[in-house]
Image (cartoon, rainbow, N blue to C red; front, side, top):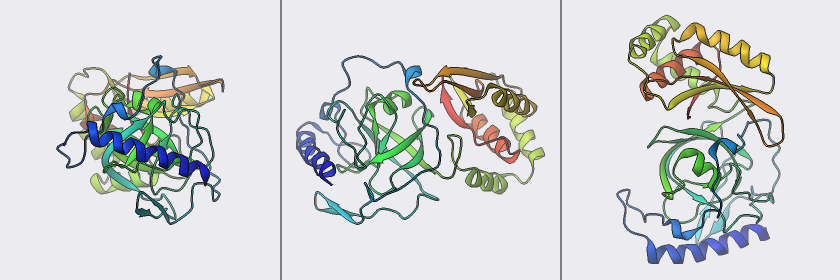
Length: 296
């Protein structure tokens, strides 16, 4: 595992730097200093960053050795990501690791969305939500870390840009594993069971949503319901979603890294996290996917 050793060696050096420039924070740990790493010299347009679309995974021993020890602490890789959910602090890494191997031998690209985690199987997929601004993205875990302080995930610089904290260094986040061949959102089973627990019928959920939808939508917060390479599939989902909300339902089509056009079905703007939550529960219960929040 020479690539792991190299990354850990650099992290030891970064930890020494952090000891000199960090300050105490309200969460009881050392505040991450952006001077530990560097952003790229040129800026990144968030809309140009390719989305991660979860799919079937093939796992080997690369990056999944368990247990393993770093900086005197031993970590165990989880046998499965099923049911994983955690809230804590995320940081990002960029130019210092750009072009180097990740723990599973891939090449780290700070311009693409990826993540490092201490215990999730590699590869795996995570939904990451910035709790400070409700932005949400899907990342692919292909590296190990973070091993400094009490952060729970290291995101690529591009992921930090998409989540709106690249200029700060850290953010409070919610992590939730995505399992199966999902479309870029938390597992349908998890959201569906939560929907059933909170509201026993679609009728009641629709009534609750109608109550919060009466307020004007200030703009900025949207739900992404699905993403398709075939426009007709996106149009069909859009048609079905319109039956459950008075908010605009539209398709945002974008070029995705030379892989063709991706047609994203979105709803909004919505009037804040509560309306987003109610609409998410309703659409999951109606078997219309598992929406997640995005910002435009």
